[in-house]
Image: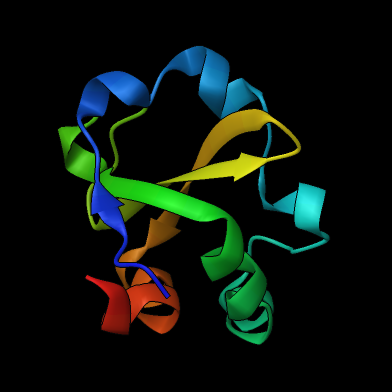
Amino acid sequence: MNKLERFSSEFFTKERWESGSLSVFGIETRTNSIEKNREIIKKYAIGYIEGDKLFFRPKNNTFAVMFWFNEIHFWTHLTKEEFEICFKSQI
């Protein structure tokens, strides 16, 4: 599996945030659901940035994760705990 790439904040736009969420994979935005489905998340995640570095929807103690699925880029926030569950070995 490839190392997850750190992206610039300019890629995390409002349009890409509105383009999808974990629900496209049938995943609830709850830590338990994210943990059970981390292989799906890892499969489609392509990049990340610390959530407090975003221009749009900055959030402390999170990571913004960019996905590529069905020819669409979208991103969502994961808590630091959720991010480690999914990507600890990739960063």
